[in-house]
Image (cartoon, rainbow, N blue to C red; front, side):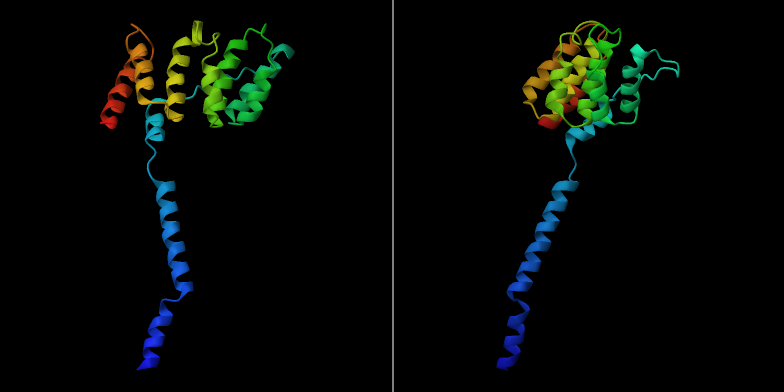
Length: 182
């Protein structure tokens, strides 16, 4: 009778306890890795990085760095694209465009703080890329987990600009964020 009790006791040895603890930890880690990411889900719904603007095969030497940057961008070689775009002189006609693509490449590298700064560049916040940069700044703030009040204020600015290219998306996103925040 005493020997049977000892066998039962051996089932709950320290090794068994450690194995059970490891299994529980692995289940917990799997849950945190696999759990839905609301920002990622929203981003898939509302954010589209621009397509690379690849030029023809006959590119002037002046434009070759830009073309190489676009090629790297199209291949999602973010570091190479950033490096090449950073070599484009401010006098180049595609300089501002290269800033815009640099910001998206930074986002592609998950360097959201740097991307937010890049989208905030005064050259992007005026002219051709102003509305897209304003919209993309909202996304960087969402990914950086800025306070919802700040994000909603930025969305409100976009919503209240008549004819803003992202007005409809800003309204829908603001509504969705408000519902999720409840």
